[in-house]
Length: 90
Image 1: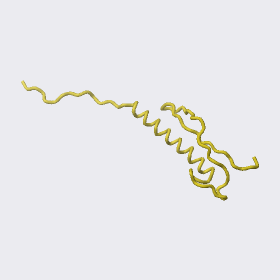
Image 2: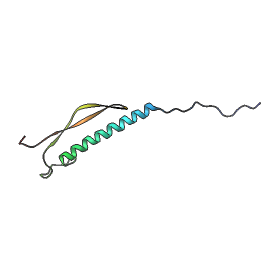
Image 3: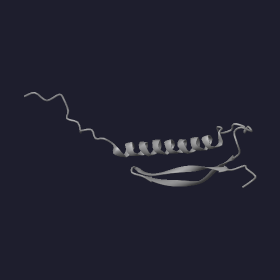
Image 4: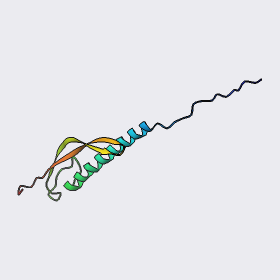
């Protein structure tokens, strides 16, 4: 009688925990990028770019307290950009 030369290995399973962690990380980066771009559009200049008379007023003042957002894949933390309006008539 011959012995089988192939072994039966365990079936592979999908690691959902890794996929959810990856989705949370990608979602956090995407939302943070959107918040930063929104401030750039509001100020009419990119970060670290000098202000011109045409670009209008306002200053970036760092980031506020980290905020947590609940998504279907878990909770993520984003930093809200802070902006101070430079107009003196307010």
